[in-house]
Length: 205
Image 1 (tube, rainbow, N blue to C red):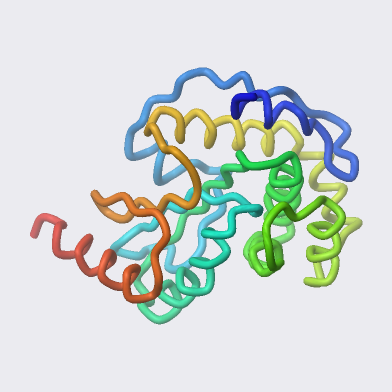
Image 2: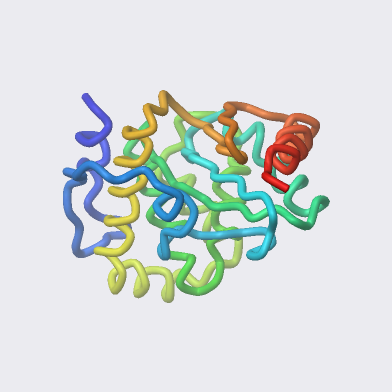
């Protein structure tokens, strides 16, 4: 089963009434595609001088291991812009989680949902556990369902673009962090700090 087939397995959420298989067309890999997708959630300092682009899956144990240190470097540095690229490639529950997190964005709660999902211990987390985590985080579930229904095409389209972008970049698995001109997998806090420093040093001028 390839990644496009996997994502096509879950056209609905709780349930999402409209959805489409991700038969993504090739995307042009340029700075605008990577940094400025209008639908992609953004954290940290919107005017930051270094951007971290994070390709993540809510069933990825290595994503979960890095998540607290990623949050910490963004908070302590103060000049990092974080672009989330939900890339649910491991299970259909991963897609379910991504749909919920992206739906929560419309009530300004993407990072709340994201952190709740990343905090679930273990791997192979099922949909019920993901739904419970989002509910416990204080997300307005009635609003979430309404936003998922209203923005089904936008959520599906973003996941399509993330998938196509990851394939165009020849990414092999999660997590992947693009920091300046550098590409990393799992990093701890010191690794993130060094990567951010190196990215700043690499900038012209």
